[in-house]
Length: 368
Image 1 (cartoon, rainbow, N blue to C red):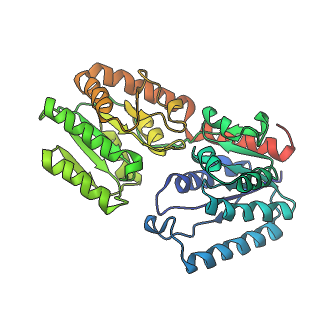
Image 2: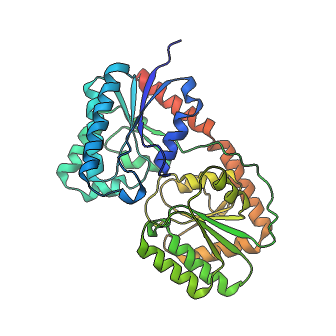
Image 3: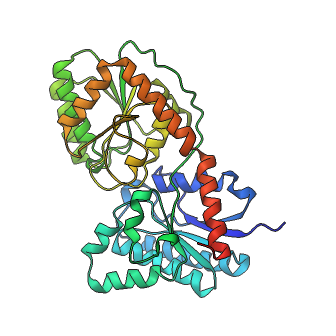
């Protein structure tokens, strides 16, 4: 049986960011048993530090990517092209040429949004830009979002049956076990930038430390994105002699070791998110999670079930929920079991692949 060809556009790590991790997992997944997966690496940035910065070399790299796509479309003739779309005017204009090339070659197109700031960006642009985005997206056959609560982002552009929900999912070598730490360990894992809420976590730690000195430890794992943010954060830590250990970015087994050693996971972004991989990983590790209502997070973290949802930029609320977990081992264990159960039922790689396969088959066949 000839497998349908699907061209997947997307960056690959490094750097380790959500969209790049997703592309890598999808390409290596069992999805290749049902489809002949082709890939176009759209990475024009060599590191996180060059994201959003213009340079002539990046312009030429992008032009080269368009020519490589054209060669793949002409030679392989895929049945479907999956195109991630940006949430900025410059980024979307680059993505538009991918959509245009695929449609000019007669290929079906499925776009994918890996965030939740799309409507905020669109509403902030000119009416000319909005009309252009509406027109160009309607050239495609549908859109994938990361959660059911993100479907309204595309109302008025696609009909409801053309908006497909495929949350992130992955397989991790993590067995659930009851934690035996004498001193509970709180884990923050993500890029260390203001928008991810790292300062709020440190301020919450300050509040907790004043009340429960010596009762807990915090591990912060990630890469500083701003020297200004780093200096502010280190001032909070040094001034209060907080029990925080900073670690460089971790991946693979190193990341899993941090998750396995933790008792509580905290990730409280201030700005819109998609469906953060760190949330999926924390669920797989069987951890109670403290997070904010951003993107599709609330579809993975159910308040008072497998963790707590707090207000963004609210260190006092973060401290209050962390305190509840630190003081109640039974609550930590029950919420941790709930996280693991929800992960196994909804956020494994198999579940993601199943949803992607059903979506690909429907779009290729012209069904909704």
